[in-house]
Amino acid sequence: MPASALATTTTLNATATGADPYGITIDSAGNIYTANHGSNTVSKITPSGLTTTLNNTATGGNPYGITIDSAGNIYTSNYFSNNVTRITPTGLTTILNTTATGLQPAGITIDSAGNIYTANTNSNSVSKITPSGLTTTLNNTATGVKPFGITVDSAGNVYTSNYGSNSVSKITPAGVTTTLNNTAIGIWPYGITIDSVGNIYTANFGSNTVSKVTPAGVVTTLNDTATGRSPLGITIDSAGNIYTSNYGVNSVSKITPSGLTTTLNKDATGMSPAGITVDSAGKIYTANINSNSVTKISAGGGIGNIFAAPPAPPSAPTARAGVELATVTVAVNPVSARYGVPISYTLTAAQDTSKSCLVTVPATSCQVTGLTGGTSYTFTSRANLNIWQTAVSSPSAAVTPTHSTTLRLAVRALKAHLDKTGAYLTSLATVNLAGKIVQTATTGAGRKKKTWCKAAGAVNAAGSYVVKCNLGANGRGYLRRQALKLTVTTVFRRSTGAAVTKSSKLTINRRR
Image (tube, rainbow, N blue to C red; front, side, top):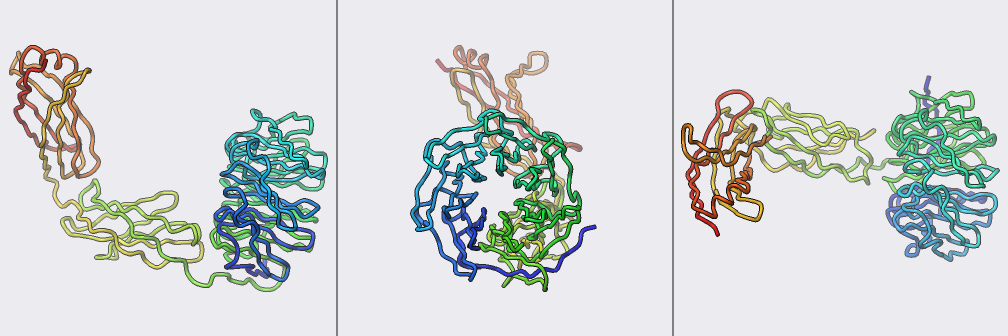
């Protein structure tokens, strides 16, 4: 059974981290570094809490991953500039492999010899950069789809977590690539780590689980019901405890070697924790994308709440008259990512608060029913996050739901157009309900009646729709000889019931 563990939670650099910190690492002196993909920077936080920004103009575009070597050099994988940045302890910044890295490197790791490896999400490959700067591409066709996380073992084998194919790839030092557990792993593995005996663990964002892959390839699922929602990052301590940063619920899960799962600092982590690391004393650190902060968690004590104020409300929703009688469809404008990840939105009629509907993410709209037809309504939106409910938004523009089942149809601006492929009639049909529009153009009557063209299409709401009726090559050929007098009939009907019809006469002059 899952448990909630007491933990002392503190927030580091709540205002000083760069925008959207994703990757996180720690050096031997206890300094924390984050890769800030929203501001193209690296932040350094000392054990005393002093925060500085490194290379605020020299880093590549949108760094995701970050790692550190034994000499204290920092490396970031730059997702949108397809390169790696190195920052020395003195602050000197250089760009590595400016043309040789695969597309959109996300995860980054380093081996004991100082070789850098990146998982290249959009080229399904791994890049290796030697200490001298030589860059090579590993397994450019054999890696699983969308590799994101990456790690390396003591023998120099490289492993990637492939969220596009729900698998793990292994690349040996000789370049042999194999795919592990391509059917048994959880959904969307993002984070990956390895223990001292070579077991691989992945954080499965889409199935809220952790997968374990032994060196022999045996796959098991850990805590299939107890992990927090949307685990993104994963790390392991010296005792073999696994930790995941749970992006969807602002928490950290701990899984012991025996399989016991506990939740640390539920709702106390910064918003949307992504990267996660652990120090030699067992303290956990998370990089929190949507609160631009780092959280430190240590055992014992009470849980601290890092939120100073509720997140801001979303902007006004968008409303339109629904397909059915006396209904309105309301679409949300999502809350800014700065304020966390909403679980749902409540949309409410300002004129009658008993009339509302709920949008559950990832849906973006819902339908408010039972309104009074012919009455004008505006709607507000409220985002429901993990522990906060925002204030209501400003109201939408006014909308009036349908109050009558009587069909109305107007047709205007009927025009003829000729080109090399044929002759076309174009008109604008305006309707007051959802249904089907059918238009025909004919000549003659009775047995001599000829249909030149027919156009049909369903419409899902009241509005104006362009109708194009194609007379084709036959129509164009006829107009080379003489004028064409047409009866154009437009019919509008719902799925059941009577239809409404509009007819007009049109003469198209002879064309040479």
